[in-house]
Amino acid sequence: MNDSFDISYYESPIGLIQIKSVNQKICSVLFVEKETEPFTIDTSLNKECIKQLKEYFAGSRLQFDLPIFQIGTDFQQKVWNEVHKIVYGDTCTYSLLAHKIGDIKSIRAVGTTNGKNKIAIIVPCHRVIGSDGSLTGYAWGLDKKEWLLKHEIEHSGPVEGRLF
Image (cartoon, rainbow, N blue to C red):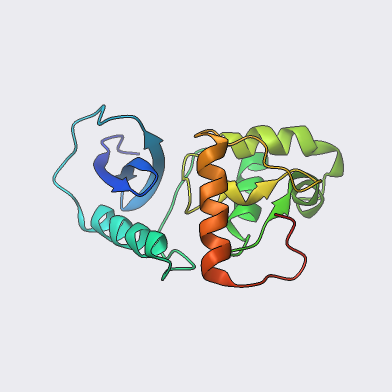
């Protein structure tokens, strides 16, 4: 695999986001403090990712339509695939995720894997919460997690059984 990334930056309402793509797939969407790597001439894929992020933050995009790729173990891929299925405005607990991947005893490993997600917002790890509805563990800070969840609730309306 070619390891030359196309890098773009987007200033979101809650902080600077760095977008990396390789081989026509988004492989990283991370909150960063500043531009740490020089950006490339924005590729059409990175531009589309920025467009969809803008729509998300405007409240008009409820689902992303982008090719993505993350390197990880089979277990990590299972977890990220389940996280990717959590719908806009809804939440899921770590224990429910463990149940969905067929290994109820893997709750801690699910949490660790969720924390290793490199495609923020698009693979919505912010939608995973504690069994009691508490906000736990978000690599970019609980303030961002809370903002994202409140943003989605505001734009999605009521969701049956929502914990947060």
